[in-house]
Image (cartoon, rainbow, N blue to C red; front, side, top):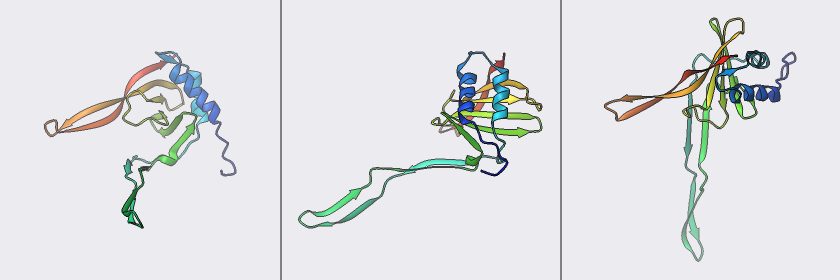
Length: 167
C-alpha cells in the first residue's frame, strides 16, 4: 500500500452494498449511494475489459507396476483459470466485488456477487451518478440472447435494465 493511500474499509462497503441491494424493492438510499462512492478507491480501469474463463482436465501418468502390469493414474481435478484485463480494478468487500469507473458524463459503480457468473441474470447491479456524485438510479443485470446464423449460434450479451430510484 502506498504511503498516502487511505485504507479501504471493506466491512463498511459490504454493509452499504447489502442495504442498497437488499433494502427496498423499488428505491435505495441516496445517502448510502453517496457513502459508497466516497468509500470506494479510485483505481485505473482499462478502456475495454477482455477476459476468459475455462478449465483444463487434469493430467495423467502411465507406467508399469510389478505384479500389476500397465497402469494409468489420472488426476481427477480440473485446472480452472479466470483471467481478465481489469482484475486489478475491482474492490472486494464481503460477498461483493465492485468496479468504479469515472467518466466525464458521470460515474458508475458496478456491483457483482463474487461467485456470480457475468451471464447470471439479476446477480449484478450498477449505480449511476451525475458528474457531482448525485445518485441517478440503479440498474440490474439482464442477459440478451442474439441469434446468429439461422439460430445455430446464440450470443449471450449481458446488459442493464433500470431497477431502483433514489428515495
